[in-house]
Length: 195
Image (cartoon, rainbow, N blue to C red; front, side, top):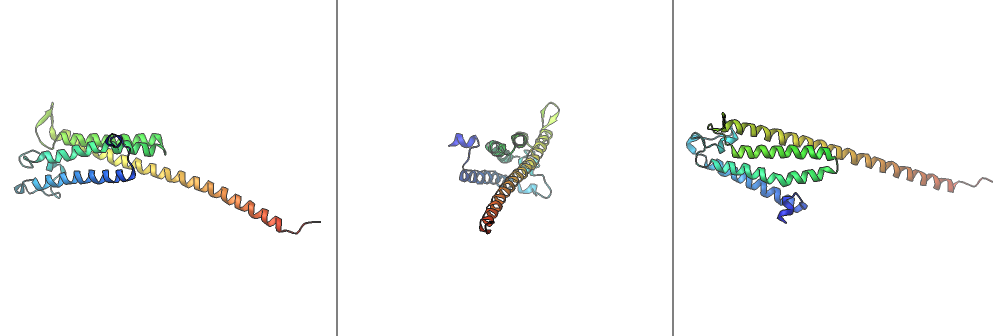
């Protein structure tokens, strides 16, 4: 069952449970990171970035920063079966659109992993880059991947709706035509015979 789910094959009930478990795990870790943020640093979502919960800089969350990183990595990994599920479900509408949507969601997941691996801190990590520089690039990938992936998903839903509507109209016209012919045939039978 775990292999099947890891490949994005969910029953309706499994998908529901998976999403609840994923959201609960992610937001539970975020809540722990927020609770563990040092009180004397006065974290507020109104004045600090979300990523400060995962910053090991002394002025942020030096002791428990890894909880935020764990939440982000969890999200990145747990999105992978959903990307596969998304592709398979939308390929019936548009194989090209499903590839683009899944690719964008995968890009968002990669960005989330980068955010997890490179906390919002000022130390140098890659050549002249600071960890926060790489972190910000990851956050941009998250925004682009999930925002644009959702847009493609919406476009595919609209395309599916149009296809269903077109099929319904064709079926309705065929049904209407059949009913009209039956009605005309019945009417002609009830006419008096011409002698």
